[in-house]
Length: 441
Image (cartoon, rainbow, N blue to C red; front, side, top):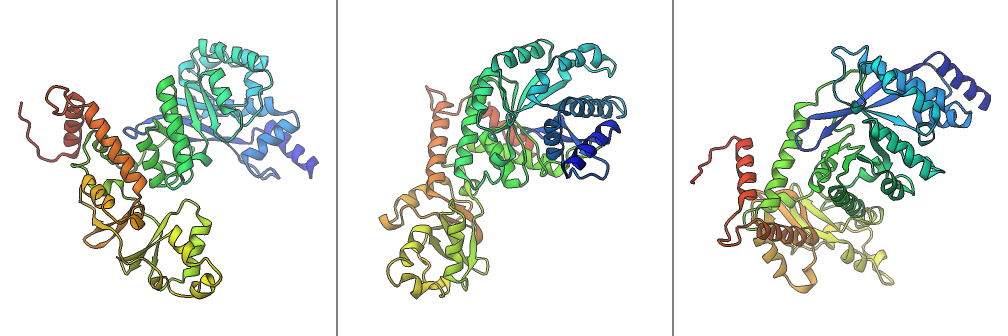
């Protein structure tokens, strides 16, 4: 089998059995295309099934230089020779750390080499993966400085997938950090991932390094990374890789625009002017006849799930929290008594439910006025009585605090009225929404 893999690898390289596809990297401010990552795909029948296996095999059989040269050449040809009109954005090219450090690469990837494709080095961004071990960081740092001086940009790829990412970032000081897709997957539900990316965004703002979120596959993931302040995004939800360069769909651009409008509103408003629907998230729901055992399984499988809403049709009828179901099923006979019963028999029927257009500050007051045993229960949000989503106490208090601090920071210190930043944000939102408004000056 190993002989066959080596044979197939040589066939792919010698017969140039590689094609390039492009996946867009877009601004998460307006959905405009910033650049594309060039991805390589095998075009012949082979025992090597995917690109990861292809590059791993090339490294194992000492063919990495030849394979990367083929992939780079194919990418440049596809973008700057065969494409009509010629490519005009930033092209992200993956480079193994050992290869970029190789003298052959330095002599082969010169400005003269790029001129034959009519390419300016400032259009090329080298993606260096942190999955590969860098043995001589001092020499590697010198190499990166050399390419920066040649006007190339540097991106650290797969940040969060390896174990030396922060060291590599601090040594290299890249222009871009690409967050690994496993860090983005389910970020809307995973508070640890949420906190990690939030920290990376704060770091990027302080260091003037842009963040690119890879592997965005759902609207919820897109919304979360935009809310956190990530500058660029890439993933199947935005657009799948393709041989052709295509425009981003109007729906995705609309999603990005609306999320940003809502974000600006949340950032520069006050808790008395912002509705609770802006904090609402879809969470687990079950019907009245769902077995207690099945509901308990949800909590066991999802450690981040703090509560489940029980619906009668589309109308919230009760809630179940992790602590209270665990208490019911504990003891010598708890599980035996309840596990096969319907959830309606043990759910809490007295819960806080509010319509989606209630201001955040009012919801906060209602939540804090509950009895101690219900003080930390999540809040159910409804739309004309039908289930809309839920808001946790943590999210409610965190957002209320952020809003009040932000409002205070941007108020005129003498009058307490909104300052220039809030006025500009409000005008931008009103202009974009195309709704009627009046201005008194």
